[in-house]
Length: 213
Image 1 (spheres, one colour):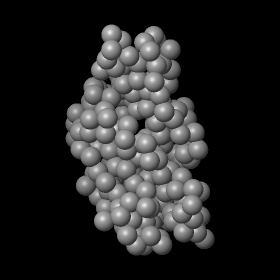
Image 2 (cartoon, rainbow, N blue to C red):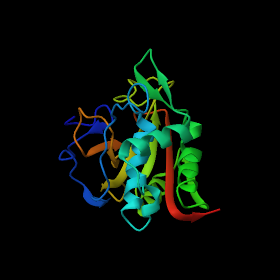
Image 3 (cartoon, rainbow, N blue to C red):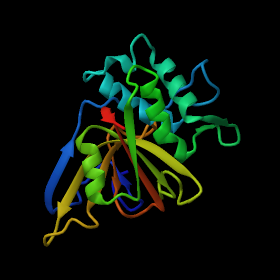
Image 4 (cartoon, one colour):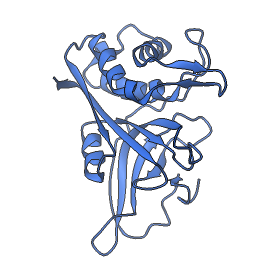
């Protein structure tokens, strides 16, 4: 993962422009797991969302996870997202359209009855950054070269924790990166995904218990 030829890297040392960044190092990094509470792996969407939920639980909104194990939290997120076991690919499968309402309904049924999640499809770079400004976000790619092998019919959902950009001649276009936890145990804790290329679709969901309808 040392270069970004496939839009994913764990090292940005090849960039030499003027550097701007923002990073939240207190976001959990749960990887997909197995449990007796569901069939197959936990799935990328519930796992990515659990990092966001646990971040807010540790930052003033403890009712989100009060009295629950992590497996119970994942099980509930799977329920609200409608995550199913895909036996052909041995993975937890979640409709992208279920992710935002799933997070919202989880929070509303765990002590924050007016909580709101907001989804942006093909967000601008400014929107990606503004979503991350309030806390970790849930980001979904389709057709990403590394995670989806370029297949636009497949997606992968991750936890957004920050961003990096490198400015050349007054512009960072083409040198913008989302910092993520990708919930794959085979990759490093911190991964950078290039913004604006190497994928066909991008969704960013911001959530905080204090966002209301």
